[in-house]
Image (tube, rainbow, N blue to C red; front, side, top):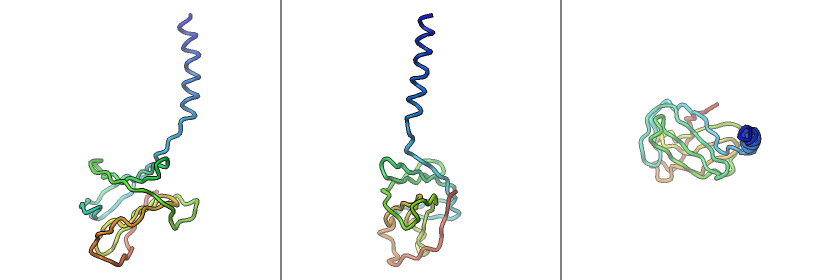
Amino acid sequence: MRIMAHKFFLAPVLLAAAAFTTTTAQAERVNVPFSFSVDGHNMLPGTYTVERDSSLGMVSLKSPDGAKVYSWVLGPGDAAPGSTKVALKFDTHTLALHSIQYGAQTTSRLDHGGKSKAFEPARLSQGR
């Protein structure tokens, strides 16, 4: 009987702890129908995972097979404060990943060393 009383006490405590634990990572899937480059690496067309870690203020891009993961710091973006849009923006000349928008936040310019000095955003792959 003593063991059962202990289990009845422990279960509500564990449930309460789980209720107060918050998940800070949020992930979205984005389909990119063309080859592109990230940080000088070629990426194939496919469905990529874009994950935001709000506690660290970072966003990560994961390849379809999960073998490649790139992470960047997020900052305030141009979107409305309540935006839920998740988008990858590319340079039309080089097809290099230019930036990632996650809600109202965005990365800084990611294609610093690109051949094109002028950025022309024409391709946009959007999640949700």
